[in-house]
Image (cartoon, rainbow, N blue to C red; front, side):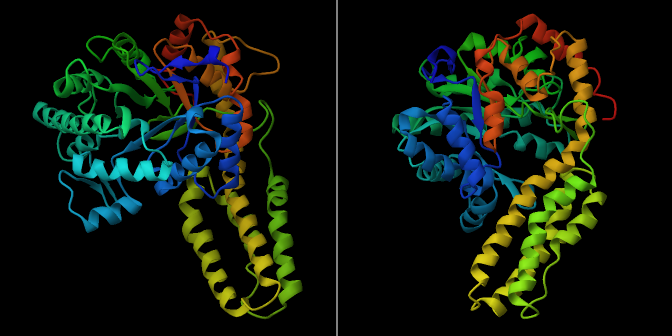
Length: 473
């Protein structure tokens, strides 16, 4: 690692790379995800951000296995707890935890010490560590947003919210003394909201809670929040004792991690701050889709050649996808229809074929190749659909340049422009980027070698994105 590029994570004494490896949707068992994490560590990165909730523990499992191989001293690992889904839902239905927020069917939340005790233990086991570097309460604002479904949260509701945060901190201080975690903090999507917003969460009041349980000797030292071109309240909103979150944290020795740097949510829509094709090029047409489907077609033809008419009929998935894909509008739409119309029919067909053909000598190899091809498609098809959004990416790049970002020939990738701007903000420690493929690592890891923007220019550009979204959104 090039130590000249590392930054102090608040007052923790930990030195971290300014670009962190975000593990949302990262899972053990996925070869591309593992290769990307290994590439990140090989390239000198050392900050890994995960959560008990990410892929239901498989994210922590992959991180634990890879970091153990590289050496524990090579990484600063941040994990989070609070969500009750998947394995945690099974646990919560078996046990009764106090102060559970039943936010939605299949989505509960809890930061009571009784529940957090299970999360610290389970996370440490999956991460294969005795001591977790940083443990964050994961979006505790669910308490406030659930109340907001019924009525605007009152001052008393906020007092109760911060009482719960204080008691969680009291438990985490005990875990620090026991040597199970080093530092703790809060990850909240609401830290950057205007002070007038009834569900805004306050870094200052979280700091007060830490002072209340361990005045002068607490270990609250890290916060995490979304920061991107559109969700930039953490850099611009004076909502924290008259200062922005970045200004306040910089003065108090609190490290700030920015998540969702390339996935901006604006007016209930997602704007992906990246290029999908070469800037200015048209999106891929039907021939590109046929090329993506061709490996699966060949495998399906092998079924007919090897098994003839025995067993279940050939699935014809490639043909079905070629008919369905032009009707799908976006990656989000793909995720909605993939389960009922693609995944479940494939699973049902495989179950029948396995019963009929399991004893056939060619079946195991064919099944393995078929499943691998389908998994690859489900990775590449959303990216194929995203290419249609390049027009929006070109418009975002134009606004960046109009606002003062230096134009280059050839054009700088939009993802690098978006991350470079955030790296230029005083008080922001590290930008957490979801890098699920090695090429994403290659795209961004050289950014710390390049000069940042002038901080005043970075703020000017962010303000240019606040009044209105790009046309079409």
